Image (cartoon, rainbow, N blue to C red):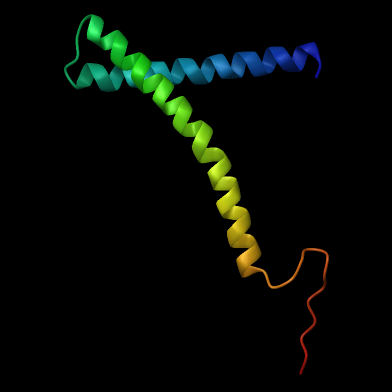
Length: 84
């Protein structure tokens, strides 16, 4: 991977984490958490969301491929021929 691609990926991951932190901050603040507890809630929500995303994305890929193979009667490379 080139250095430019690594920089782009690093920037995108920082943007994702920052947006999750700000969203979690808003939820905790609206919920009435103030002061130092607000920081704890932000970190709890942020790392919880990152862990959930790390589990949901591979699970979604597996479920979609399972549905595709269970619905499709043939492989992708085979042609459908109807026998009458």
